[in-house]
Image 1 (spheres, rainbow, N blue to C red):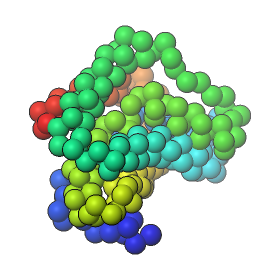
Image 2: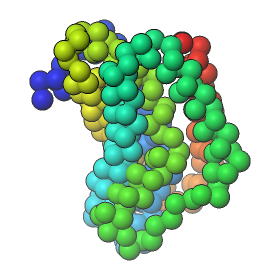
Image 3: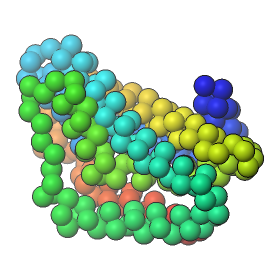
Image 4: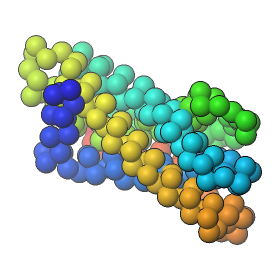
Length: 226
C-alpha cells in the first residue's frame, strides 16, 4: 500500500505523464464503445436511472482489468530488463500502436463484441474488458507509463524488483479508471436525462476515426521519444 501511495507521490516529477493519464481517461470515457452508450441504452430500455447506474461499476471494472493487463505487463518487463525502458520498448510499442490502428481500420468493424441487454454484472464486465482490449485502450497509456515506471525503477534500486513499477501500473490504472468512470457517467446521465440516443444520428463525432488517429499519434510519440 505504501508503494501505491508513493507512486501517486511522484506526481511532481512526472506531472506531464500523470496529466496524460487523466486526459486519456476523459478520452476513453467519451468514446461510446467504452460503455456510456450501452449504459444509456440500458437505462432507456428499462426506463430506470437505477439500471443505468448499476451498469457503470461492471463497465469500469472490465475497463480497469484490460488497462491493468497492459500496464502491469510492461511494468514487470521493464523492471526485469530496465534497459528496455530507454529505447527498445518505445520502438516496439510505437510500432504496435500504429499497427493496431491499421488493424482497427481494416478489420476492427468485423470483430464487434456484442452483449445482450439482459447481461449481468460479470457479462458487462467481460464485455467492457474485451472492448477495451480490442481497441488497444491500454496501449494508449504507454507514453505515460514508461517514464513513470523508469523513475520508479531507478529510485527503487536493485533490490526493489518489480514492486515499484508494478505499484505505478496499479496507480495509473486506478486514476485512469476513475476519470473514465466519471466521464462515462456524466455523458450517460446527460444522454439519458436530456439528449437521448438520437444525438448519435444528429451529430456525434466519429470516434472510430478519432480513436485510430489517437493510436497513430501515440505510436508516433513513442517512436520519436525513443
